[in-house]
Length: 180
Image 1 (cartoon, rainbow, N blue to C red):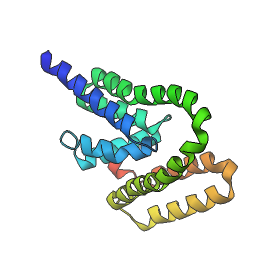
Image 2 (spheres, rainbow, N blue to C red; image 1 turned 120 degrees about the vertical axis):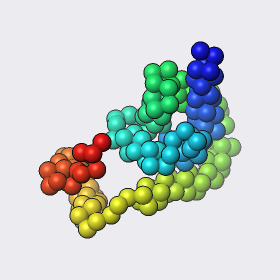
Image 3 (cartoon, rainbow, N blue to C red; image 1 turned 90 degrees about the vertical axis):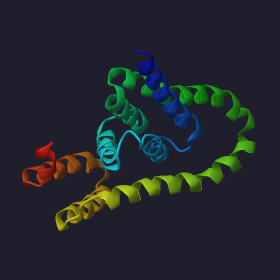
Image 4 (cartoon, helix red, strand yellow; image 1 turned 90 degrees about the horizontal axis):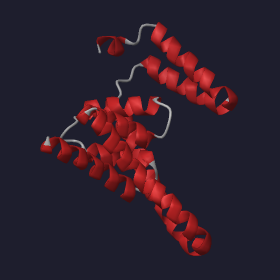
C-alpha cells in the first residue's frame, strides 16, 4: 500500500514539475515527458501514446497525462498525472492575469526571447516522430495531398482528413492496427 502511494506521488511530482517549468505548452512538454518516463515506458510505447494523445480531443498535455498515468498505475495514475499537469497552468493563469497587465512592457522582451526555444522543442518532436515512421510512397502521397488540400481548402480540413484516414484504412494499410 505504501509503495502505491509513493508511485502516485512520484507521477504527480513529475507531471507537476514538468508542467510548471516547461514553457510553450503541451508539445514543448513532450520531450521532457519522454525523458522523465523513459525507465518505465520504452520509445516505441511512448510513440504509440503520443499518437493516441494527438488523435484524442483536448490539450495534448492532458491526453499524455491520461495515457501515461493509465499505463503506469491505472485510475490513480490518471488522477495524479492530470492534477499534476493541470495545477501549474491554472495557478500561472490566475497570477499572470494580475501581473501581465501591469508589467506588459517589461515582459515583452522575455516572451520574444523564448520563442526560438519553443520552436526548437516543437521541431524536435516533429523530427522524432518522422524518424520513427515507416515511410512508403502511399504515406508520402497522402501527406503531400493533405498539406496541399489543407492549405487551399481551410474550411474543409476536417472532412478531408476524415476521408483520407478512411481511405487509407479501407485500402488495407492498417496491418499494424489489426495486430494489436
